[in-house]
Every structure is written in structure tokens, then in C-alpha cells.
Amino acid sequence: MAGRQKLPKIDLEERFLTRVSWAYHVEGLTQENVAKRLKTTRLRVNKALSEARRRGLVRVTFNTAFAACAELESGLAERYGLQTVYVAPSPTRVDDTQMIVGAALGNLLSEVLAEPQIKLFGMSWGGTLNLATRFVEAMKRPELEIISVMGGLTKGSDLNSFEITTRLADLLGAQHSYFTAPLYAGSAESRNTIIELDVFRDILEKLRSVDALAMAAGDMSERSLLMRDGLPSDTTMEELITLGAVGDILGTVINADGEPIDHPINERIIGIGFNDLTRIPNVIAAAGGAHKVPVIKAMLKRPGMVNTLVTDEATAQSIMDDEP
Image (cartoon, rainbow, N blue to C red; front, side, top):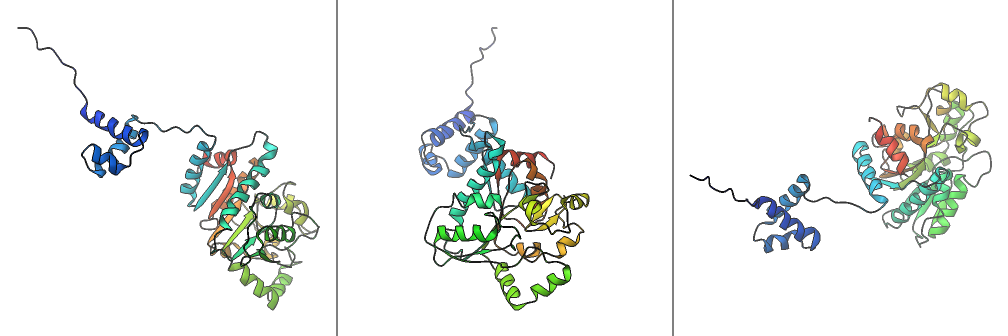
């Protein structure tokens, strides 16, 4: 007796997954409308879309330089518990990294500072923040106040907090105020005396109450404004590196674990500290470049200190490539 001929079988489940995916991704129907067309439930449509991607029946591709950036943003946010991550595509020339990160920060600040609930905004200083002011959109925010959050440098510079704060306030039609103190006191004793003065105690409380704050992360090289122009005359960059320093955050010099190094310079800072940063709703940190990777990683090891990170693609990839 001749064997029964085997007839080809139709995979009904795969056919259903394909019909759902085509209607949703190609025709642009909503999940609810797909469910009506195929006489099924929206829940089944939702599960079918997920299953089609899991099987590889549907692949999503992005023909844009920002695709890798979006993946890095998601990965960094998940790993370090960040509210927002802004990764800019790396420039062709490595020397343009600071400009790219500054532009990204400026774009982000245009969004943040347009929010009516932001009434008091803190601004630190540095090259990246200086560049960011070139990319902030002009707007009218007369009810907003920009305040410098770091003491000034003894040497004049257009990267100083006074100039940056004034420039940003002018762009926004906002008010501005300065933290008129040096970054470091001559000693821990003189620092304690200074911050006990009514005028400084009041302004420190004001700094602690900002709605958002933008800051940079300094590395341990001559590229750093602090290392180049801001260290007290009795302190050298080399001795800080010997003690394990990888950079600074608002003048506090930290090690690879994000902890302040054991050096008198950290007892002489006139300004807000790490505990103050954890109480600010949105602390925005901007930094990029291979030389900044150690200090960025150290900064991110302190939970809750940074809410928003702005960096470039190569820097973000270097951070993600390392084990957390």
C-alpha cells in the first residue's frame, strides 16, 4: 500500500504573528485597530508583537548615528540609576569632544530652563559649561535666578563662575547672583570662620535650595581649570595624584571610589558638599573625553549624587565596557 503523501503544513501561529506585525509596523495601525481587524483581543496583539521580535520575525533597525547613543543612554541610566542620560555622537576629531559635550549640555539646558517650575538654577564653572552657554536658546525668564555655586578663581578667566553665570542670565533675561568667596580658604580653621559669617551662611543655604544645578567633572591634568589655575599655592597636582586622586567635583578632590581623598585641601572648600547635592532634585553633570573617564566613573559610584549625565559616545562606551 502506497504511503500517504505528506502535504505541506501552514504554521498558523507564525502566520498570525506576521499579520499582526505587518498591520502594526508597516500599515501603522494601533494595537486596538489590529485587534479589531483580526477579531482578537488587544492583549493577544501585544503579546504577538513581543513574540515576533523574540523570534526574529521582526527586526528594528535605525539608520542614524544616534542609534548607538540611544542604546548607551539606556544602559547608563539603568546601571547607575540616572534619571536622564544625554549621549552625543563622538566627533571626527577627538579635540572637538568638549565642544560636542558643551553643545549637548546647552541643548539640554534649553529644555530644563524653559520649565516654569525651575526658579533657582545653580551653575558651576569650567570649559564645558562655558561652551554650553553658546548653545542655550534665548528666552524670557525674568522670574528665574541663576546663581554661581562655586567660589571664584584667584586668576581671571572667562571660564570663571562670574562670567558664565552672567552670560547665561543675560540669555534668559533672568536675574543672577554670585557666590563671592574664593574656592579654597587658607586653612580649615579659616574656612570654618568664613562659613559661620551670616552672609556666607545665608548664601550657602540658598545654594542648597536650587531646583537644579549644572556642574562639570575635573580630571587630574593641566587640561583641568582647577588643576591649572585654582589650586592653592601650597598644594600640587602631583601630591594629590599620589594620594589616589582621579579628579574633582565642585572642588572636592576624589579617588576612584568617589570618596574625598585624605588631604587638607578638601577641608578648605568654601561651598556645598556631596550630601547637599543628593538633596537637589536635578544635578546635571557634563564631561567627556578619555581623560575624564576615571572621574566620571568615580562620580557615578556615589548613588544619588548625579541625576543627569551629559557626555559623548566614546566616553559612554568606555564607561559601559568596564564592569560596574
